[in-house]
Length: 425
Image 1 (cartoon, one colour):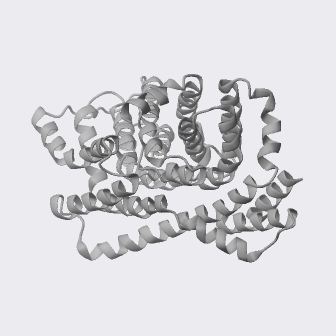
Image 2 (cartoon, rainbow, N blue to C red; image 1 turned 90 degrees about the horizontal axis):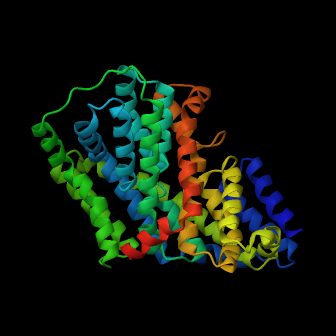
Image 3 (cartoon, helix red, strand yellow; image 1 turned 120 degrees about the horizontal axis):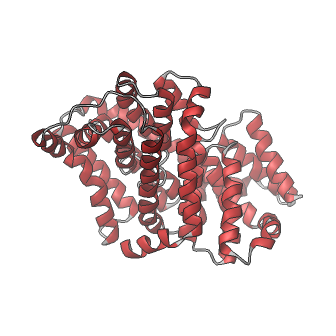
């Protein structure tokens, strides 16, 4: 009964066009009514408690850092550096897209923003060189969803806050899986594009490569600096967000000199709007999460998964398949916020490492951003490349399967996440 109330109230509110945050509050009210304890005061108090969280302070800083970096010319220099290194290889522009996606993921953390930035820079070049545009667009879309996996990741912060898991450990655990996604995309691209008759860019001299590297060194240093700072305890994740903002401002305004001070207000407003949406959704989700944990929902879902509890690998496979199916219908944020409080008690009961589960769960939801029909990244890249959704999906499949293969490889071999995490920690 409780599962039915939870499902129908949430999906019904969303079907009426209600924003996700308000739909979560409607769901919380419906759960309170079903438990015979409806009290608007408790709802409002829990909503405030959900927003009153120190780890959430990382979100506005990373949002602002992403805005500053995109406006300061960092993304363009990353692409230029990659072009200087591998642009002359057959299929090299695809490798440039993958390299840029991994580097941008370590800078902005936004799948939609990274996809739009890389697509706007590379799609015209790839079209002119004779690449299959739907396939190139599919690659860039698949590369864009690496952003929620490699820190700074808003998705990992959301999961960490809702599940009460260390955000610092989630950040460190996300690096290697994100790089594996990039490697898988590069291999898939070289396989499907190996016979294409395309124009190959001229090989750049070592002097040109050195100049591109020197210009891009400021952009390349940030992710390396973040890993080192987190590993040696110099920064907490929130402090790392502050440092990223300061670094992005200095580089964009005084090193590259492409960030005009008069445009700073607009960037602050954009970051504030994005932050308000995300934090309000998280606060509303924590209200529902509190009610879910006090209701029979986890026990009922646990009973459904009881036959798989004896084998961690099989249980993880079942959960990942469930999340893939949900991801085809729901966007990233609502899936994370709805399923986290439901699945975490089961994960803990089965003895699965919460950090390991969190990384795979967020990766799965990130892949959901490119699974039709709802995937928001698909709509972004369609707008950038001026192709239809049908054409894009045709070109996307090899890269979607490559990322799903990485996901299930990590399910089968948890050490691929846990060993790098142990070393980095």
